[in-house]
Image 1 (tube, rainbow, N blue to C red):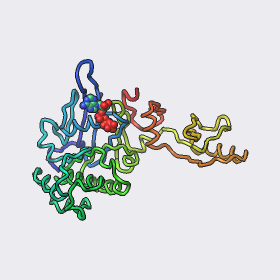
Image 2 (cartoon, helix red, strand yellow):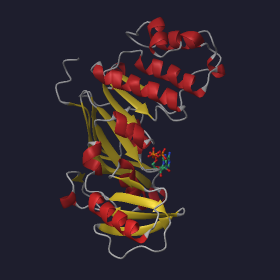
Image 3 (spheres, rainbow, N blue to C red):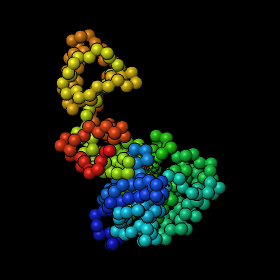
Length: 324
Ligand SMILES: Nc1ncnc2c1ncn2[C@@H]1O[C@H](COP(=O)(O)OP(=O)(O)OP(=O)(O)O)[C@@H](O)[C@H]1O
């Protein structure tokens, strides 16, 4: 690892702001973001639609300048030290700009020519499982294969920091899992990964640390377990009109898509109470489902603007200026 990477964070962002347009039409897409990506970690940046993830990532990638705040990537300024940072960073954009007329091998050769120390083309073909498609033109590839070519290019320079913007969007479940294995392998090889994704299961499976953005700010930060802690568990079943009053621990009830959904802070007690009532009254709870707090429930609460968490009830860092 490079000697000037003396600090423990591959990316450090402080008070980052990004405004599009000026005057009356100005829009602030990033509103004071602090973000640390520990060296050797996989950090996932998640967010509701239009939260500002891409706007933030573009600044980290050195493609845009912040309106305010500071960004350090591998200890350097990604805009003014762009050449140095770029050599040590692999970026996967949502859409790559490669010509579809070239074959996979030609594309990798061409890309390798732009790098100072590229890994061999044939090694990348094997790593991304593209051997059978090496002489196929990129425009004839499936979505998953095209994404693997993009990833091969991202990894070809042997980057210390890998920035992946939605790496598995549009991939089938099998290809997604292959990409997950590849990303985990990067961490094992000592690289740092910053990834954005819309898939919560992906973030939960892969990431050591999550940063959740909403309306231009980071509103939750921590491990997946820390983030889910303190959120209610849910019990659901096919809609029932008649339910007992005051099931122990239940804090909220709603009906959605033909199901009754109960939220509880004490899943075991509420479930025991409900089952005892159902058993005693000959009631069948069809499609009964009980689950502990998940990242999904946290995320939906943030997206809906209802966020039941309180700072006392969780280890999660409740960040200043969170939900509005
Ligand atoms: N060039 C631009 N000019 C004006 N507004 C923009 C521009 N680019 C993005 N925005 C706005 O900034 C906000 C943040 O956009 P951004 O693409 O960073 O969010 P995101 O979290 O990546 O969203 P998504 O996950 O939906 O792609 C959005 O409201 C978007 O409409």
